[in-house]
Length: 396
Image (cartoon, rainbow, N blue to C red; front, side, top):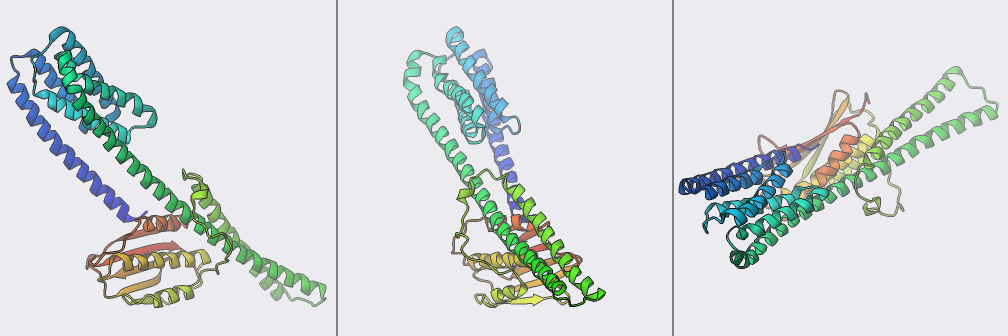
C-alpha cells in the first residue's frame, strides 16, 4: 500500500482528535456555567446532565451507536417526565447544548451508522429533538417545533451528503482496484499464452525430429526438454499469480460490468525494458533520464510490464502535479533478488493546474501488491517527490 494513503489517514485522525478536544472543552465550559447558574433548581440541573450526555455522545468514538441511542432515549424520557410531572422554568440555558449535541449525533448517525441501525436511531433522535419544547407547554411546542424541524432537516442533509461522499469514494477506489486487477490479469494471460506457445513450438520441434529419423544426442535432448521445463515453470508461476489476483477481485463489491474495457480487439506485446526506454525518452517536459543498472538480467515479463506501468503513472503525475520540476530521473536496479524501480523529480509542487482523480497510486499498489512487491510514494528529504516500487524478480 502507498505510504501517502497511510500518512493522510494519520493526518485526518489527528485532525479529528483536535476537533473533538476543542468541542469538548467549549461544551464543558458552557455546561459548567449552566451548573453554576442552576444550583438551586433540581430540574435545571437534571437538564444539564442530559445535555452533558448528549455532548459526550457527540464526540464518542468506538461505542458511538450505543451512546447515540442512550442520549436520544434519555432526552426523550426526560421530556416525558419534565413535561408531565415537573414543568421546569422556561429558558434553561443547557437546552441549547443538549439540542446542539443531539443534532451532531444525528448527523454522525446518518453518516456512519449501518443501514439496519440508521433508521431507528435517527427517528429516535429526531423525535427527542422535536419534543423538547413539550417540557414547558403545548404552546411552546407549537412555536418552536417548526424551527427545530429545520435544524433536524439540516442535520439529516449533512449526514446524507457525507455518507454519499464516502460511498462515492468507496466505489471509485473499488473501480480503480478492479480496473488495475483486470489489466494485470490480461497482461498475465498474454504472458501465459507466450510461455505455452514456446512449449508447443519446442514440443513440435522434438516430435518433428523424432519423425524424421534424425538422431538426437543426449545433450540435444536435455537442452530441448530443459527449455520446455523452463517455459512450463514460468507459465505456472504466472498462472498462480493470476489466480491469486482473481480471488482478490472477488472481494470487490462492484459489478464487473463497470470496469473500463477496450473490447479486447488488440493484443499487447509482452512488456520489456525496450518499451520503458521509449517511454522515458518521450517524456520531455521536464526532461527525463533513464538509468538501467548493469546486471539486471532477464526480468519476468509481468515484472517488466509492472515496472513500465509504475514509471508511466509516476511520469503522468509529475506532468500533472510538478510542472515546476527541472529534471526527472528514472532508475531500475537490482536489490538482492528484487528489482527496484524509482522515479524522482526535483519539483516543489508549484504550478499544479491539471485535475486528478486521486486513485492512480491505488491502482499501482494493487498491481505491485499482486506480484508480492511494495510501493512507496512521498516527498524526498532534499526536495521533490519520489515513487519507488520494489518488485520480486527471482535471480534473473
